[in-house]
Length: 97
Length: 369
Image 1 (cartoon, rainbow over the protein chains, first blue to last red):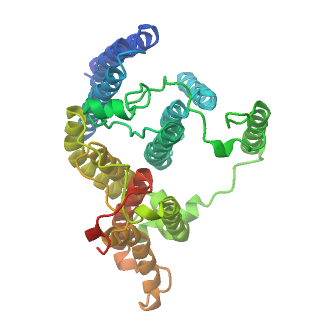
Image 2: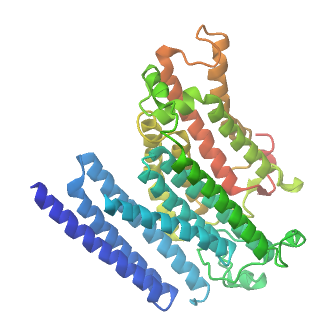
Image 3: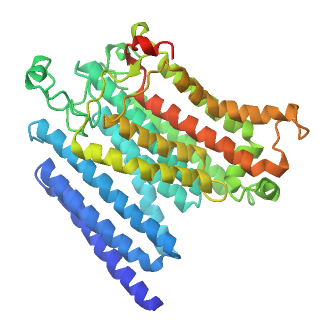
């Protein structure tokens, strides 16, 4: 059972890291701000979600697991809002850069 | 073990690299964004050193609250260079004719996080400072001198830590011996609020002085009025949603952080900074206006924290427990109460520091309140 949890952690966290890597590559390589935002947020929400999911088997208690999930949900909320604000600012600035 | 060393090494390189980047950043705004990320990385470094209290403070106050003050400062510098004032996350008046009338539509002067605008020239007052070039930025020789000097300080500190004979003298054991009497499980909070209470109090008084300094920049005409050039209009939907959804959660987290400060990393400063973040969010979303700085209730609340701390210390004069001491039987409730009042005052002061000096004249009815 412990072994199973450890394997799940390894797999899920690795998958999460791949998404972070993809998001970073997108941030560096995509041509304009809107697509860069897209790469960043999509990859980060999914990446962090997978990392949190992977860490759940390692949580010492239910409370700790809930805190991990809360961190993920709050990051989703903040990330989505900030992306909206940045995208609006770009839009108002004429959609350039 | 070596894997942990690898991660620590990468963290150190990241922190140093980001520090260089912040110094080399093209615009003030970009530098501030880098500085906020720098603070978060530093918090991670403190966590690796098992200093949870310092990490929390660095993240909440060093990176969060200071970052907000610096963002406001960067926007002001930019506004000083170009007339249209703006504020991060605030949509400008949407009437198109007004926009074109005062040139607000210039791209790049609008909060929302663009660091791509050309670097704003600094204000004229910096022009004649020795060692600075014409734009008011420090010259290369001054920067190099600063680099060498900070490098020397770092090397000296590292040398002291690495080459002292034997373990450094520590008072940790003596300090923790008496903590159960205070009902404090967290040694950091115990030391801050019991042994070094005077230092802790002075930190709060320094905050008050800082607020006085910011308020003293207010022009006479608008003294006692509200911060921000105009009432912030209700922003866009996403920001309003966040400003309605997050504060209930944030308040619970702040109270939790304050409460666990007795036994685990946490405390008044960290909890206060979280409350401040919620308040600023509500103000920026345009849900509540900033309070007039002349309000008597506001000033009482700002002074309440340090005053409560002082009152508890001075109560020893009349109570048999002795000057500047906590009565042993109610030490913990008393400390929690002091911390709670302090948290509210800290939250208010940090928020007012971010909001800045008044920029709108007070309503006649507000003058006396």
